[in-house]
Picture 1 (cartoon, chains in turn blue, yellow):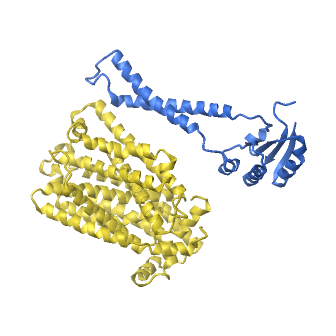
Picture 2 (cartoon, one colour):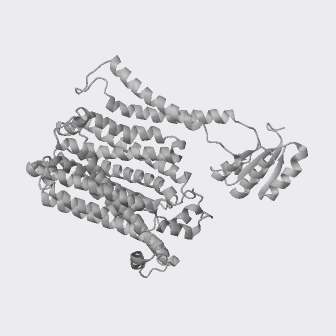
Picture 3 (cartoon, chains in turn green, yellow):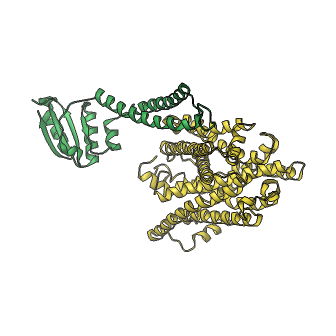
Amino acid sequence: MSGHPGGILAAYQYVDSAAEAIRRLKSQGYDDLIVYTPVPNAEIAQAVGHKVSSVRLWTLIGGLLGCASGFALTLWMSYDWPLVVGGKPVGSLIPYVIIAFELMILFGAGATILGLLFNSWRTRQRGAYDGRFSDDQIGIFVPCPVERRPAVEEMLRNSGAVEVRVEM
Amino acid sequence: MSAQYGRDGFLQRGANAPTGALLAGGTILAVLGLGLFVALAMGDDPGRAWRMYHVNFLFFTGVALGGSVFAATQKITKGVWAGPIIRFAEAGVAFLPVSIVLFLVLFLGKHHLFPWIEHPTPARGNWLTVSWMFWRDLVSLLVLAGVAIAFVYNDVKPDVADLRNEVSGWRQRLYERITGGYTGTPEELQRIETRLVRLSVALCLLYAYLFSLLAFDLVMSLAPYWVSNLFGAFMFMGAVLTGLTMLGLMTVYWRGRLGMREVIGRQQFHDLGKLIFGFSIFWAYLVFSQVLVIWYGNLREETSFVFWRLWSDWRPISIMVGLMVFLIPFWGLIWVKSKITPFTFALFALISFLGVWLERYLLVQPSLTEQGPAFGLPEFGISLGFLGLFLLAYGLFARTFPMVSPRLVEKAEATGHH
């Protein structure tokens, strides 16, 4: 017994046929499919019905936080141990912009990774997989009970799948 | 291709762009504004008039060149999304011949503008002498205008060839002349495409070199002891930003008037919005990277230029420029919704456009006058006069040449970009 619900796994060679199969499955009410693509593809994403990801909000908040931290860190450090260097003010905003900018990038990137991990974890789903889906083929896994399987298998084959197999 | 209009529909619409408002408005503004300029230049304070003339000459030459440079980048990168709107940017080249005439007129006001004429600066050797500077800048302007016009000429040619039997009178004679032996076979079209790419590369490279030279000669030499190596790049990238915002405003203007809501949609606004957003950040980067080095170096001849603008009467103008070119468009255009909504898109494009104008004002004025910022009839009047000249030249282009290229619209539609 594998760790995922039983269902049907189909492999596709072409984007259009995979997208067509996804649209047909969706129209028949199979909403819990898992689709694997080796590269991002707009047509597939549209067929699956992906909404705009919320990860970009994580990036924005991370970036702003980084920018604020950059200024806070440098100013706090300067005034905590005040040294006059080269006749410049103790807290000099102009060069601190660089540190604020770097921390903005760092925090923004970090927050993006955290957002990605969080969102993947929240929407995780178990299903069968095949190594080809990270190489050159598109995979669709349809979880479905035994009695519906022949119909789904038939439809996937008709829509141009190169291989369809039943996963227990 | 949108089923509703088809190729012929776009040809007709593009060839008969409604230009009445542009031409009338442009003529009125140009006549009033330039009349005011002549009156002021003859009056008590000719310097004030010439300074505004200089600011506007720099700004509008930059807008015209920036628009065609953007069009050239699209040919180099084989970008098709801008196909339906590219002519709105290219039409700006009609201002370049005007700009050359304006430069010749500038020669008359040289004593009011260039301090090194009366007080020669030995530190700059023979570089800053009247004849050497005016000759090299005139040749630069002629070369830039020549390449930009040749580029647009070749891009317009296939569309003009399609239209030559649909127009009459002087336009037909002009179209026949431009078309020449061109019959529109795929080989001929291919030859034109190749030539367009070559001209685009030439235009972009020459633009970077020669506009830098113009920036050094016409802006940096106003404070002849001040030097910043990056200044040329800062000026020409700012001009590309104004070319983009001009294109954005013109897209909003023409979209309904040419009945192009079908083909100019979300994609074009979104992409242009992203470009304006990106160039705003790049502008801020170029400002900062100059300020940082000058601040650290703390050399008197370098800091005075910045000091005079950031800590004197000019401070409010500097803050306005930072807000209008960077912060407001940044927070305004960061959202997808505000980029794809024509109203907000146009609003932020306009703020950025005016912001760069104010930046050019800030670069020129404090070098030449002891007084603080002044905004009165001379400033607004002369600027509106130049705007009028620009709109007039633009309107004449739109009246003469097709403003829509069915060939480029088809290419954009084929990739689903709309």
